[in-house]
Image 1 (cartoon, helix red, strand yellow):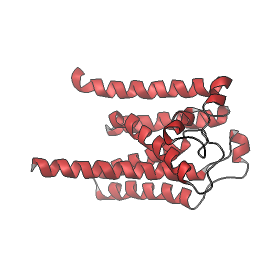
Image 2 (cartoon, rainbow, N blue to C red):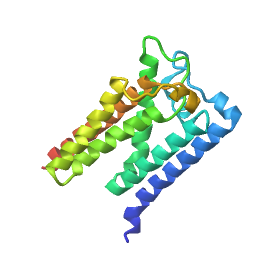
Image 3 (cartoon, rainbow, N blue to C red):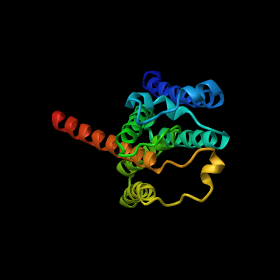
Image 4 (cartoon, one colour):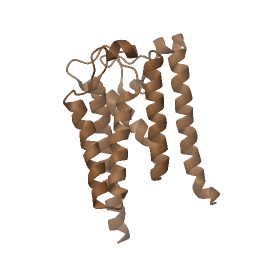
Length: 200
């Protein structure tokens, strides 16, 4: 095994593991929960990053922990895990930026679900880009579109979900995170095209 090649991958897996631990600590320590709550109308974009690691209640935390772990596993299987921490940061910034630009910003926001939608958008497009058959490429792109339409149209939000999770759903954050994932995928595609032209 090439240890030099594996080193960045191990770093990325370690970074994701650290994020999972910080999510648990931030969510279970009351002082940290109260300290890191994002108020889009009164705080800068960069101040909205850490609050996305805060979750209120076990259900809210458990769902996002499991989702991040699953997406990390998929990224590892696709050979894209090295990029995942950077994509996650990009998507958290997209969520925070989007929430601050809203005409009527949310009073407060916590949770990683918006950024996770961004990871889903990016990963489905990466799958579509790397799939060996045309059918799988179309399926990956279609899955990306379906996830986006679900949030844009406000579909699949059962009544009482907010009470069960301990926080009200924030579809706007999901949309901004999703758009962040699309933007990252687009920028990566432009960069690959630029490199190809330089090497030609």
